[in-house]
Image (cartoon, rainbow, N blue to C red; front, side, top):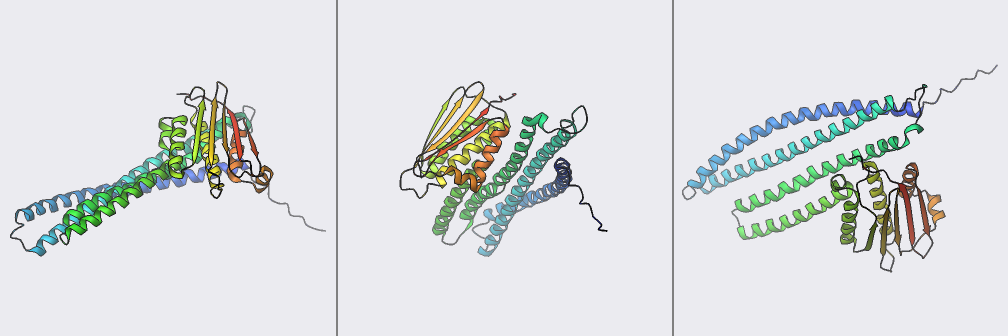
Amino acid sequence: MTLQVANPPEENPLEAFEKEIEAEYAKVRETLKEVTLMLGQSQAELAKLTQRNATISSHLQQVQAQFDTMPRMDIKVAYNAALDAQQRLLVMRGQLDKLQNDEESLRRYLKLIERVREYLATDYKPAGGGRSIANNRPASLEMVINAQEAERQRLSRQMHDGPAQALSNFIVQTEIVSRLLDIDQARAKEEMSNLKSAATSTFKAVRTFIFELRPMMLDDLGLFPTIKRYVESFKEQTGCDVNLSIKGSERRLQSFLEVMIFRALQELVGNAYRHNEDNPVKLQISVNIVLDDMTLKVSVLDNGKGFDPETIEKSGHLGLKLIQERVELLGGHMEIDSGIGRGARVSFQVPILDSEN
């Protein structure tokens, strides 16, 4: 007689998702407590450094009053102490700003997770018992996209208030150093000027990265101004000829729909450029958007090398696959028209959901 051991039943995907949400909820709450504690400690340290900096600044004024009679070494020590105190204060302020933004981002993320928990506890439960995902497909799609974008927003704010803030402080520090260095001042100032220019250029690059990661104006001004800004920025950075046409009454759409459309457009334009960088023919990209009362249609056309749609389908191109899945989840459809040597046209349309605001 053979003893058969039954395989354990597979866990319901929805129940697994609920467990992941609960684990993430606990993790974020714990992280928020740690950040809040660090924030309090940093604020206390900043108060001490501010007091120390005021004391050193007062001493420095005394040194300046006795500049002609005080020994050169004492002057140098006083200025070095002032510079060190100023640098510590700037670094601590930057750290405090970062912690404050981290705390704000974590609170926003925590609220989003709480919304998901409430949603799982109520919206998925039909009156007859059991669970149904299909009953609220647009709302569930909104949750998925919002969760993804919450992470992008967190990274965007960290870039903005981390490296960008550090670069801003660095520019201030170079100005301080250029005034304090007393050996070959002309050359020192020249070097500091070059360093400042490099830092400024890097700062602009970081800001560009922030826009590509999560354009803040998408939240503030909406989809269409953001698309126009993106196209202009893309043309400046790549030198590519991009023509944008928007027909219809521009208006705010629901936030998750604006995000989906912008990300899709960003992917399609980026793909057209990346896959035709080695093409000897000057690349031209046309972006056409048609907006009416019921639907929004987007088409991206280029004169590049083109490709075999069947090959792309077999290779499982993640960018196009993700766009297609999101479009179909929204009740729309996507079309790809291309061939080797005749460019490409990728278009999709989705039903319109106007903003509730």
